[in-house]
Image (spheres, rainbow, N blue to C red):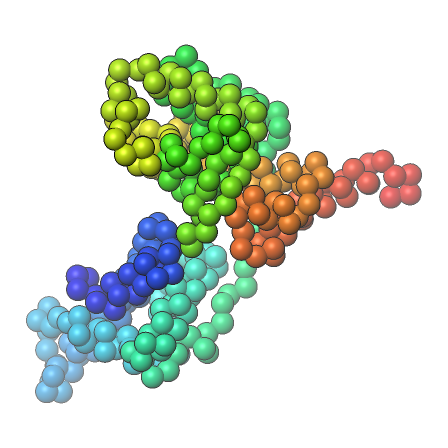
Length: 330
């Protein structure tokens, strides 16, 4: 629905005041538009049934205007929200997806109340559905080693892909953070990367020697490849992406996922492995080898330690397995 001014204002608030990433703001936008469409459908059905003068009129002749929809959105009560959740349930959404949409509405109505747009918050009476706790997936060191051998390091873009995989595993950065890296965020002398995380929080993460070697190899090939001359000698170095696409521009998160899918297929590995799996693997391997939780929290860029603590379930399960196998009276 075009012209949903409240949605536009709320998404602008998320982007420019809360500093949400464009992807996260887009997800909020999509959830709210689905809610608006449901409200519009309900409004149209009601208006079609009664007409403005109380008489029945054909549905096709009635349109739920943006003003009418927004009036219903701003006067929504808990029954309105429950009707929307029942509508979602008819599509068979998972509890996790429903919980995310509820979280979107919580944030939206909290914002409307704070700004005097609504007189009450209908989300106060809504509970989030219970979810099965899913442990993050991690792969083994052997699987990582196998995956890293897949790119053709003799070619510029193959060397780039090897550097990307090494960086993801070496630092645990989110794929959105990886594609946002510029050349000036790399410090080869100190062997670090400056990461611009969620909420514009910056952190410095160390690079392992293998990742440094892979990045150096990629940049060396890039500097001598005539196809990417403009990407090497740009006037504004801060804007030059660290990892470029085939046209010399900035890679997208979707492109990184497609590259990973290609190498997973070549390696005969589980196709459900994602760039985020490498982030989980990074954290799990650190904890398995004795890293403390606070350090892993800082490296991952988690604001809350409780977010990082989910990884301790993985390491505890492995310790339990080792204990059961080794202890005489386990």
